Image (cartoon, rainbow, N blue to C red; front, side):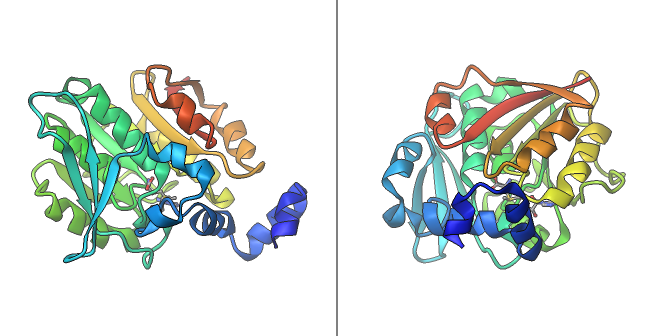
Length: 267
Ligand SMILES: C[S@@+](CC[C@H](N)C(=O)[O-])C[C@H]1O[C@@H](n2cnc3c(N)ncnc32)[C@H](O)[C@@H]1O
């Protein structure tokens, strides 16, 4: 399997994806280890630099929680800002805290509460809910974390665990489906590591388009894994332009791990 992966034959890779659409994610889990709950001990040398820009991670042995601590300089926010997460791969890949989500959450914490003040902030493909929970913990915004039905229980547990029930709402939102009536028009849309499954590419573009207008701030954190991802960007460019976020001091480090944080602009 590894030999085939490195040959770069896109047609063959897509055939393999057909058998196991999530195989490149499994590759991440096995080789990088950074997203595994006990991952710190298994991180490869190339990933150790990335760890310097991810939030500090520890585990509560008692409750088997992952605790992510974000260092910041905001007086109105507890220092560090800590988010506790139940992580569980059983409901799907979203039950883990992926590096792109950690990077997007870190960026938002560094931008601080003013950046999202009084805004409706909606996260797509939230998984554990980390990014939206960080928004909720900063305060001053109304946050919605959304995903498919199997992820909702873990998202609800994580909202309760962080006492964010009044600030973060959990809603099912399947890309490509009509936007649920209880979701208001968002001022800010967030998405991390949502490009990995080719049949979902047009659905994600459709939902981004349905939710946004040219004034919507859309932050999109993307991990490049395979050549087929370019098809997503081919679809995206019919409705959006994008620009890499340039004011993140950690950018060069995560860029080296093929992670990019971009702002999308609805055309
Ligand atoms: C790789 S995980 C990333 C999770 C989280 N954003 C993070 O960075 O840790 C991708 C997420 O997209 C969600 N997802 C995939 N297809 C979806 C769809 N059609 N509708 C809604 N969510 C979807 C998955 O359930 C999963 O939570």
